[in-house]
Image (tube, rainbow, N blue to C red; front, side, top):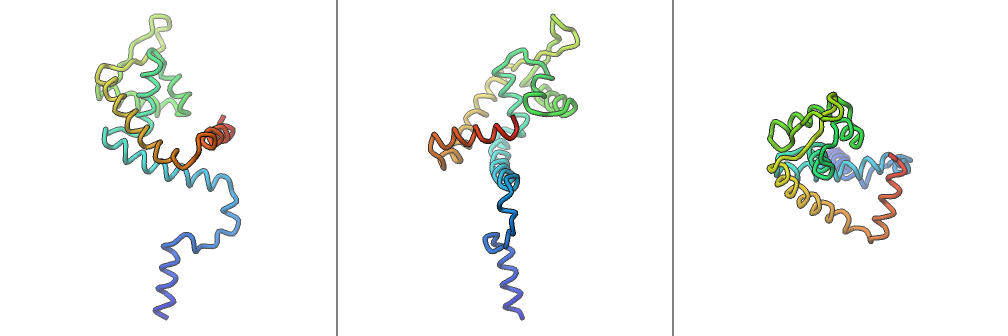
Length: 156
C-alpha cells in the first residue's frame, strides 16, 4: 500500500503522467501556460530594478511617447483607470515619471520621464531583451514572427 501511495505522489509531481483528457487541445490552456512561464520569469528579472511588469511597460511607453496621456497608457496596456493611475503614482513617487497638465486640455495629464527614469529605462530594456532572447531563441526568426502575428489575432 505504501508503494502505491508513493507512486500516486510521484505522479502528482510529474504533470507528464496526468491524463489531460482534452484540456491539452484547448487554445486558452496553452496560451495561459506560456504566459505563466514567461510572466514568472519577467517578475523575477524586473525585481532587480524593483519594478512590476506593468510599471516597466508604462515606463517604456512613456519613454517612447513623451507627453502621452494617462488614458493613452491605460488603453495601450488594457488597464483600467484606477490601475493606470496607481502605477503612474508609484512611478512618480519614485521620481522616474512626471505628470504635467496639458496646455491644450487642462483635464489631461501628460507624462514624461525624468533623467532618472531615462536611466532606469535603459536598464529595463537590457533586462527585458535578455529575458526575451531566452524564449525567442527557441524559434526561428520566421516562427517567432508568425507566433506574434497569431497571438495578435487573439487580442487585437
